[in-house]
Image (cartoon, rainbow, N blue to C red; front, side):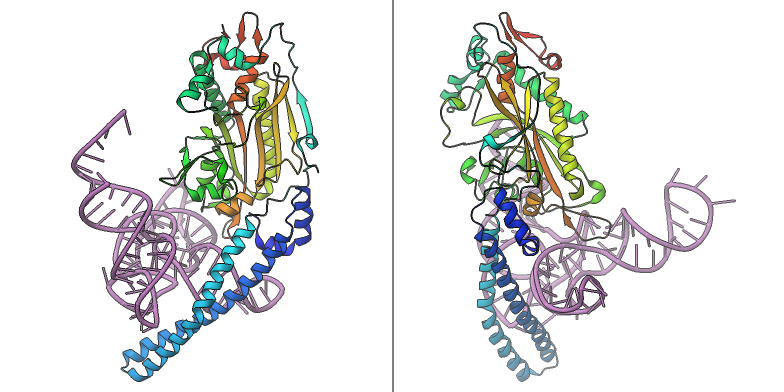
Length: 423
RNA sequence: GGUGAGGUGCCUGAGUGGCCGAAAGGAACGGUUUGCUAAACCGUCGUACGGGUUAAACUGUACCGAGGGUUCGAAUCCCUCCCUCACCGCCA
């Protein structure tokens, strides 16, 4: 969430930036400031009254110690009277703080100045495109047909044991999946990321910390008995590893990678966009998360983009990089690059990675801070990106690499997969 | 799930109603000194939100797992919840 002092000092800028995100509820900005004014006023009143109570209480202690009972009694009444006045102030203060927080979390992150204006995905800017779109042989088919033909993925079985959007990978399909996870992790580790294998469920505080709660509650699976949420991405547990921590500047940057399944309810999706592996309720992903010094985050964002890019190149998949426009970016992001690979049989681009700088939006929620020497703690910047989401990579490999005699496995995966081809 | 013991600052750990934001030791940081990776000594060593200031200084309030309660006054007493540890039960 945004920092209140920043909003107070840069109101015009905030409004201008929110407009780029097509954010309409701009009155919330004034509300935040008004609530903060109210909060300060109540805080002052409360603190001053409480200070009187505290000093009187100390005196009572002294008087009682000296055996001056009557004087003590008199003071006791005075304190009780003050406390009577304090109660409603305290109540109002708590209510105001809650209202302020509730209002504050409704404000999205401010888009960076690099974010193009626009409302829909059509307004995203193609930064660059790389790789050749393969010409498929006659009779080439989409991945869901290939999955059946080579017995790689069974969607019906997943339907039976769980529901739609929960595919069962089998045989070479399962093995290819595992090979990719291993390869992606190794690739990230070689680039200096530390591997983590976090829990797949998180508590409420974690879900709030990265911005899933309160507004995206319906998109997560919720284990109500224990009040745990199934993670929609490893970003949630990895970022929250550092929740409420104060790091030293020399600890930065923190570079993490992790493989996890991801669970998304994605209510309301339908049609051919969700066919096969295109959109699932459970899928595998290898994620990158970095915690950086605020001065370095955009440099690091570029570095992460380059990293994901080279990973895609190593898989020899045609891809393009989009800089998301204000209207298409996520609530919490300041700048996002989406990576799409071309699915030759479906003849469309599929998003396989999203690399974002959240600046201090998440760290303010999570209270992840760092100190320079003996300086004051300040919020650091968080970034994350997929490297990569597996199902659509799988779809593209199957489709783009299909030949009359089988599916060619990208060279970099062959050692992990144990073969050069699926036949 | 049952029983018992606990949750205090970066760590260890003292503190059972006012003198406690909290002893002591360690770590870390800064400095002095010693001719060399060490030791000794001195100092610093929480966070948040207010007030105040050009900025500081200074100052108020809150925080000893979380939330309530008792009391003039709570780390200390009571209640609820969460968590950790030990043993038992169950179990991959």
